[in-house]
Image (tube, rainbow over all chains, first blue to last red; front, side):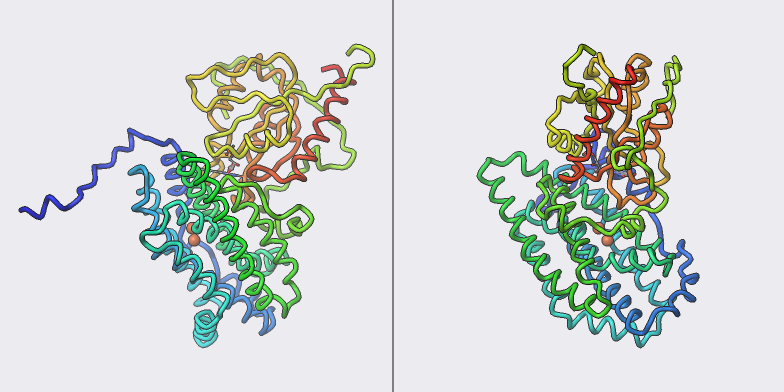
Amino acid sequence: MKDMQDIRIPRAINWNRLQDDKDLEVWNRLTVNFWLPEKVPLSNDIPSWATLSAEEQQLTIRVFTGLTLLDTIQNTVGAPSLMPDAVTPHEEAVLTNIAFMEAVHARSYSSIFSTLCSTKEVDEAFRWSEENPHLQAKAKAILETYAPGNDPLKRKIASVFLESFLFYSGFYLPMYWSSRAKLTNTADLIRLIIRDEAVHGYYIGYKFQRGKERLPEGEQQALKDYAFSLLFELYGIECQYTEELYDGIGLSEEVKTFLHYNANKALQNLGFEALFPPEVSEVNPAILAALSPDSENHDFFSGSGSSYVIGKAVATEDEDWDF
Amino acid sequence: MPEGSQPRVPDIVFYSSRSENTLRFVGGLGLPAARIPISPKDAMPAIARPYVLICPTYADGMGQGAVPKQVIRFLNAPTRRARIVGVIASGNRNFGATYALAGRIIATKCNVPLLYRFELAGTPTDIARTRAGLETLGRELCSTEI
Ligand SMILES: Cc1cc2nc3c(=O)[nH]c(=O)nc-3n(C[C@H](O)[C@H](O)[C@H](O)COP(=O)(O)O)c2cc1C
Ligand SMILES: [Fe+2]
Ligand SMILES: [Fe+2]
């Protein structure tokens, strides 16, 4: 029985005693978000797939194998590597949910493949992804940061960059097809992944900020420098990856704008200011609309010459004004 | 309004959780603003003038609960609700159909316009548009004497 003393027994998790309310808030959001690829009628995209040229089909499959690699990394290395760094037991539980959903994401690209493509095309694309130097370079840059013994806060920086930035050279394409009314069911599935990643990036960025604020000023500055230099490194790789994929259909510049926009959002998730100025990060409105369909709204400040009209506020006296 | 005085922009009331994106956006505006507290134990800001509410979205997957509980508590008081003149909502487009949903809900409930939407802590463009919009709104409110 003497071995027992070396084993760390975790304390049973009590969800009624929270150290950080965000843990429960995010847990709740993640659990209601749960989905499986079988819920999306991908086979409705078969006629649409047939309208793509051979080059466009190959590009699409390659983009999805690249995304598969990133989700595989998050599932098997990224999210698990964050678990020992968790500050609360609830954070650890949230990370197990995140890790599992990464497996669902990685699995769902294969559902798209088996619905739309031939085995041979898919095998070729997986081979391409294993040999593509840019894809391998970004995987390597992230994995180095995830390595055991590395700074827990640097790991969080890398994780936020992977989930809020590196995915977007790939996510662009299904949003682009969707804006042209192509592969719309595939786009629905990708939007479920994008929504999950929004919560992951938010939460890990939030935990990064909580950890950082406890450090002395000098260490905080060093982390910020690290974040910006890692982003520059990744950005360089992303630009090459983007050109290799999208030059053929003439979309590289538009994809880069999308990269700038997402890099800025990744930095904001970490609590930092944006890097790329508005001139180079204003995304094509059709792509923005594809990200958030059915949410479009005419608002007063961006409208031209619309005049302010206020209704009479309803004078309800209800104690409990229900939303 | 006395002759010659500057038309004032409406007051700003905002909510921001501990991730503080909305706080950063409001900081960028550089205008006086009152924060709705995160804790229900703390006092709500006192409302003396017409104000614009800036509010992030925290929906579940079905769009339920988009308006943060503390904002609902704030608006539940008829005296505070009576002075809202518009809402600016934030969120993240990556949430899809529920992007900035809190804005649409509050606008409908309070019968005021949805003035603007922005993501996370906003961009310099968002801040410039919001400042300009608030000034225009200040002028229109003076002329309609709310
Ligand atoms: C649990 C959770 C749910 C969210 N739901 C939505 C949503 O439905 N729509 C949206 O546009 N943004 C959503 N967001 C994003 C937040 O509105 C966004 O991050 C905002 O900047 C938070 O503001 P704050 O940091 O000032 O609290 C959600 C964030 C979290 C953590
Ligand atoms: Fe993922
Ligand atoms: Fe993720």
